[in-house]
Length: 98
Ligand code: H2B
Image (cartoon, rainbow, N blue to C red; front, side, top):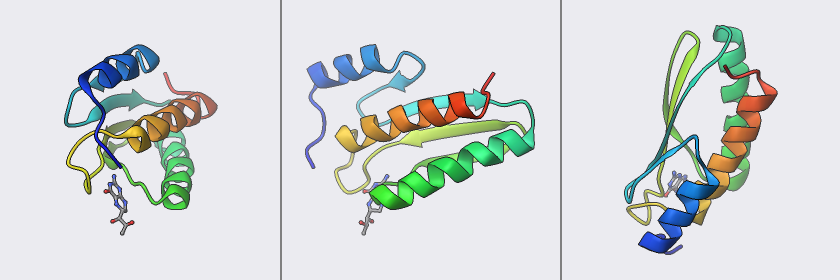
């Protein structure tokens, strides 16, 4: 899977306004109502990540989740990361992200 070109990264940034897009990774910090909502979000994303065999680098502290998406095998950002970022945005909405 090829890394995105700088033009494609610009398109991704337009598509994903809640993300910080750079050539190495996509980043989003999320805040939920409480731990239960944060963990429900993570459970939903984890199932999709395993289905797609494409996994986030992330951390959780109580109601906060920090997500970094990159394609380790490619050493940067690919369409797989953009697809997972879109899924993350949907899962965040479904779990009442603040
Ligand atoms: N996730 C991410 N983010 N990047 C990868 O390159 C990657 C992955 N590779 N999940 C997958 C698993 C690979 O290790 C397996 C063997 O397909």
